[in-house]
Amino acid sequence: MLGSRQWSGNDMRTTSPRSVRITHRSSGEVIAEGPLGLWGITPFEGNLYIRRKYLRTSHLRPNWVPGLCIYKFLYVWLDLRLPNGAREPFVGWMYWLPNPLLPFIAFRPAVPRISPALQVEEILG
Image 1: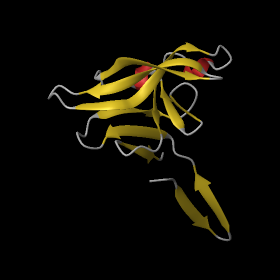
Image 2 (image 1 turned 120 degrees about the vertical axis):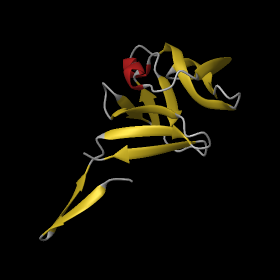
Image 3 (image 1 turned 90 degrees about the vertical axis):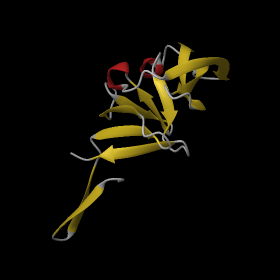
């Protein structure tokens, strides 16, 4: 659901999503659920940075493969390792040495908004 449109007379308004639920498609494991915004799940550059309070799984684990973004700095990739032994490699990442000008990405697990492995549902109201 990408938002809803309400028609009233001649004006058309769109309502913004209030919350997001991120689910692993094949297992149904809910990775995160919470409000959109700086204090919840923060959208930035097509990705979702998840505040730990809204993380709903304990199965995201660093695989210790580092990455480097020239302006966000150093991160490690995260794998989803489920109790049944299933593993989804490189499902997300976390900045361990972030740019101090971007504090809202620091130490937050992040996932792409569009991923074949994940389903992102926007929940209205």
